[in-house]
Amino acid sequence: MINKSELVVVGEVVGLKSHVSNSFPYTIVNLRVDNILKGDRKKLNKTIPIEIMGGNITRKEDAAAHNLKPSDDKDPNEIITLEFTHLPRAGEKMAVGLTKIPKGVNGTHGKTWSATYAEKSTFFQDSDGKYRRESEVSPTTDKGNHDLSGQKEDELMNNEMNDLINKSQNKK
Image 1 (cartoon, rainbow, N blue to C red):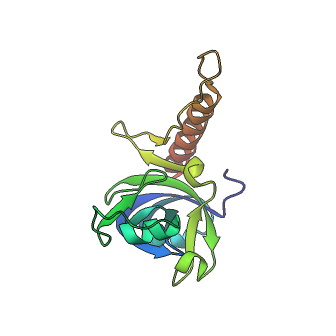
Image 2 (image 1 turned 90 degrees about the vertical axis):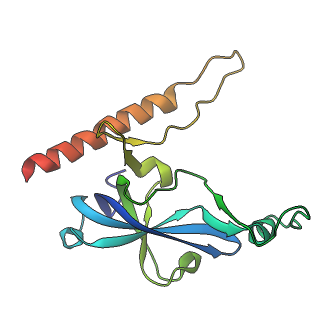
């Protein structure tokens, strides 16, 4: 993940703004960079925009995305929030591997960043101070057993990200 990312940072969410492109919601997360784990050191203490899938959209726009007619019993202009992965909240701290997105992709108005492997390279700080990826639901086999490979990968990646963060803080 680190090798595939142009920039790997730790920071705090200082703003969020949803937009719709091709009837699909996106959110621009403004992240204040507190630590650079890989990449351009000039980004330190700057705020960078990160685009993620999901966000606020009207019921009418959501219905159009699925070639459906809006429900008659609901207000078509009501704003709903669609979450495909964890949508950050203002004040949350996160560590993330990023790749540049060119201006104009998904309706953006400037250069933005995107998580290199979506939720796989996005870690949120928990109450214990550790950074963790959002766990995927583990699939169940035909025999009712759970496939733990995803959980083991999460644990390995969480440990490696926290080790990387700790090593970078010890260098300061």
